[in-house]
Image 1 (cartoon, one colour):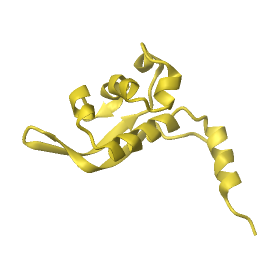
Image 2: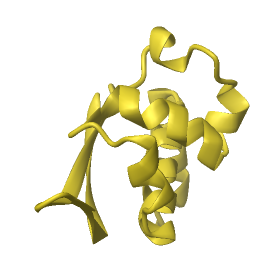
Image 3: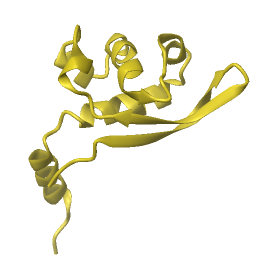
Image 4: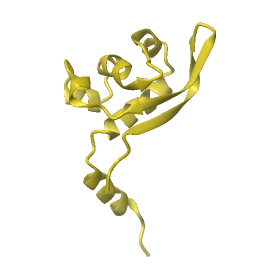
Length: 104
C-alpha cells in the first residue's frame, strides 16, 4: 500500500493575497532536500517555525512566511497534521486503520 504524494487542504479562512483569495492549498510529500535545516521532530510536531520554513517548499500555490503568520490557527493545525501524516510509513498507517475498525 502506498500513501498519496499530494494532499489538498480546503481552508476555513482563505488567505488574502492582494486581490486574490487562496481557499485551498495542495501539499506535496516532502523530499530530503525540502527538510534541510529542519529537524524531523519539529516538523512532525507541527511547530510553527518548522512549518514556516517547510511550507513554502512543498505548497501549491506557494505559501510564504507572512501568509503562515496570518493564517487561521485551525487551518494551520490542519496543515500541520497533514504534513506530519507524510512521515507515517504506509504499513503503520494501514495497521492503525485496521486496528481502529470495529469488528462484530
